[in-house]
Image 1 (cartoon, rainbow, N blue to C red):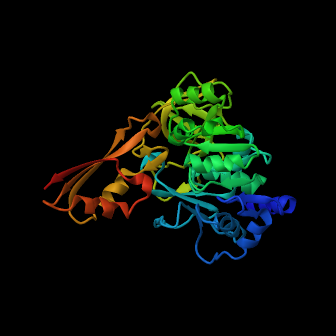
Image 2: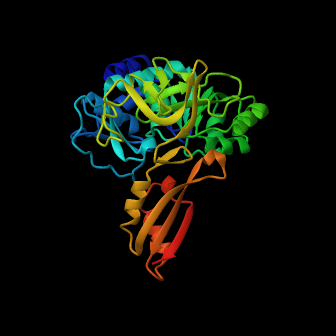
Length: 399
């Protein structure tokens, strides 16, 4: 199914630019992606697609052409976690994430689930080929993969990769002209607002996901620039769930829009939002609760209300720490600290950030050997983690 859709895209738009790189003179056509896919090694149990790599899209095409799963990886330094119990039959995509649960695991998706999310995002967000996507967020993260990578693969919507979400690079990409679709997280949108990026006239669709967007920031951007940053809500396990398509700023802080096409949402007795979606993962190698994927409805870890007006999220009851839209597993951090020289004990906790758009921060208390070099401990830890997993608050106690 996936390869057939891709073949149609190449047949229609083969000579057109599919991906423009960080420099304006670096680009690749749909047909060139197709040709590069023929050079990808597909001999393993799965194919790696590294988000920051020029080979990201060829790897996806090669894997699906060879009927192999593709495993998304953030960057070249990211570590592939062991998959427990093997890969289920029919798997076309593997996401390795802790999600809101805080449980590090692999999530498995079939072709039908991938296509369902791609079409849901295309229709629900109003994505089209006359509006390029700007990838200032990771293509290997569930958010970026669903709203940037899949629309390119399934609908031929071109993409421009931005070197960094820093304002200088985003402005340079916007200055190249043509209507743009710009996804971000609250912390990035705050920086873009403060530096004038949100005033750029080519931004015709702005969305925000990953963490709560404050009413203050949303109203501030709209008042100053006439741009409505629209909330987009989903989970790693289910893909996209809801979207606030309104052009008017919200009045309720927890409002995340109406369910997208094909989504049914409700609320269970504990207040958790329950989603019926044809893009939900088919399985995982580490369940967050018994029979997590055993029914047609998925119980998210977000509590809130579901009304005729849409979905309202009040809080998340998962164990993950949400650092500016990135979910961090406390259990993973504890396990790493326990292997470091000089560490006798460790406690990792979430801390509410003073900056609302960062949402949460990581706080760590370490019991260390007397007179042990604390800077050395921090550096040992830094070398073992992703950049967003670095604690902002440290406390050292000598044992």
